[in-house]
Image (cartoon, rainbow, N blue to C red):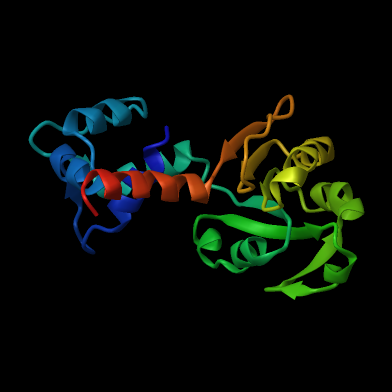
Length: 199
């Protein structure tokens, strides 16, 4: 499942007019083996044709369907500091059918501040906005100390999927899928490889 967005991005990077792609070509673009590509795509019911490959547009459609990209998904962001503001302003989400519909913070000095097309609102408005705007996904960009309580507030408001950018590990509230993006950890991994390779 985690590789499907990578495959989709690879397919979208193919030259205009290319109608077919082999598992070898897709594997090279994605940085995996062709056997892994074939296995992953077999779960979609798409086996391709031996010696011919996969029909690009059909495969893009199938992957998009599996990822739920046939519809728009409404997203709220809690924590409108530098990272929260940057994510709120990122136009690439719209291309993937993710619409930011609400921005929230606990700092009264940020209430009413405009970020992109939205106004920062107090946390007391979270539940109402989630219901009114049918949000199902929440992003947490708060300090680590606030992340766990924010995750629970998002869950209590009806959010069912959370992307946590706050440093540190938090527990997923019951009934909620939680993914963690720790930028400092990723940098530490890179520094490990640099050190190991004499960088």
